Structure formats: structure tokens, C-alpha cells
Length: 79
Image (tube, rainbow, N blue to C red; front, top):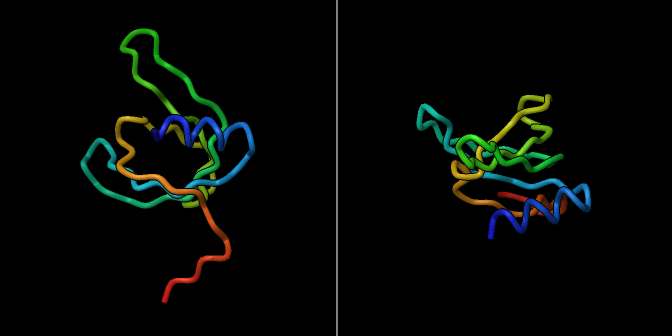
């Protein structure tokens, strides 16, 4: 599950690549370093506090808006 992948990345300090759909339904790919996982007690929504390499700052992502996730690999080349 996505949550398990994120939990492992938090524990090991690893980066992930996520495909994310924001509240305006805009899709983006981001490289993030997950820092913490929180559940909002009022609505039971899972939040991922992360460092976002795209914005170069700390951001919070909704787990339910993550469409895909893979480990970040520095040795993968795209042609």
C-alpha cells in the first residue's frame, strides 16, 4: 500500500516520487522526502508532512490525493 511505502521512507529517510492530484484537480509529479504521517482526528484524513524538492520547502500532502508512488532512484535515466 502507499501508506506502507511512505512509512518505510519516513523510517529510512528516503525520497519518493509521487503523482499527486491537488484540490483543483491539477496533476503533478513531485520528489518528496516524507517526514511524518498524521491523521486528522476530526475527519480521519491521513496527511503526509514532507520536504518537497519541487517547491524546496516543507509541504503537506493528502494520502487520498496520491495517485501513484515509487521510490526515488538517482541512477535511473530517462531518454
